[in-house]
Image 1 (tube, rainbow, N blue to C red):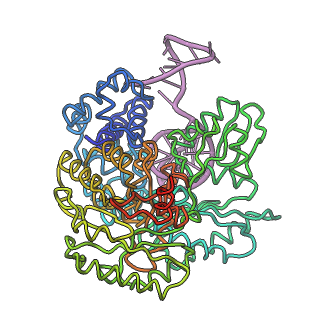
Image 2: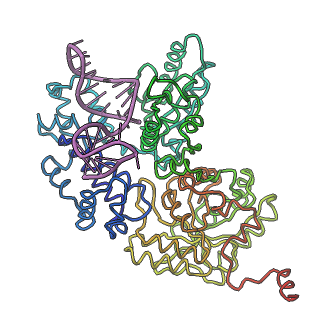
Length: 597
DNA sequence: GCCGTTTTCGGCCCGACTGTTTTCAGTCG
């Protein structure tokens, strides 16, 4: 059983317990363990084999360990099952509705025995909800809106979608005038998370004689943004709107004096903030979105920048991508924070497609676009023949493509065009092209595009075979997942990483926003096992080359440093870092040196 | 249900906003 499946059962149990009226601590303990599992790099199934190891996890005691054992043994958790029977399996849907939380869901159940979105919607339409204490006419309207949204969208967006909306809206807000100091996206977008639920924008206002007047003017300007579908809320210093695409945006207006505290608070993650506040308390401070202040006397210690708040908490500056409470606070305390890889460290892009298979641009066009991004080299890696839908190349066409790339090199200056391939890993782990052809390529990227539902053992063997093939240099999008659309392949990742390390095969962090594969926790695992990483865009058009930034952000979330990523190396060093080809002719100079000695 | 160099019982992060109230509970992030 996968960690997220176990986490889901525990999280749902927490929600059901809260509806059931359990005391706050009891359901919090389930939530905490669910959060832990979501970020745990090891498989909980493996951890649980050793009961002492399981109980050593923070928040897992005698009782919780027993529950986890039960879930792993039976695939279900009896308390969750019992509660779902007591209510209805659909009752959890109601919590998805804005303005409905566990207390109100419990009330609705008590009064109407209702447990479906449709049921609540009907009651709201008939004006019956207002009979319940705590509900009124306005609540009915809100629930009707929320039910509508629930039906229309799952509610999460790919990072590039949110990023593009954020850039447009930030530029618009800046037009409001001189009162604005800066507009900064916070939240999960700033942390580089693979999907974004809603957008948090912080608008910092210059100090002035009448800040409130400025704030009101800016808020009015924001509410006139043309792409607003619906206004959700509008308070003294906050506006929430729904954009046409369905993305919710929360804009907060604040004075520049407390910008650091606000940025820290609204960047999150929630778990990171909780831990920081706990640490603040222990040190005699209290931390909120306005400032770090002393518990006694309320004296402000820091608020203008994140740096000074971390400093007062005796921590190094923690990059937003690390703020998930998965060890970054301890690392910051010890001075062990990684020096994360940056976009400008990247010297080349190692996976992209041209019109030879399913890309939209020619070799030259890709080369020219990459040169403009300042790269020193790229690998052109079209598909191999097994991917017929993508017009994959057979041996003959691959050899022709190599010639075309060599010829294009004559016409494109200031960037090295490496002849590559994205060769398919067949069902049994063999590669889709003959060794004689693979031997002539500069870069061999291998990946899975078929039989994605193989069981754990088969898929493990298949990938192991591919890694053991002496021509494989990079495994692309290693888990095959599609963000929001398809789950990752199931295989023994630790064995795969160990094999990759042993054979010098690099694992890709695919920067394409629909993939982001390897993902953050797997990258961290790979790094810990000493596996080389490459970050590539998998571009199918020249304009996709800019997706690199999402790959870099994902790598940063995985604690990846420049030295972990081989395409941060200049060309010659990069080529030397790739797995050496079998029987590769030694350079003449090396041969002479050998002869002399 | 977990946890503890103040605690083995009593607390579990904190504040704004909303919509309901007429002083506040619930939701949200």
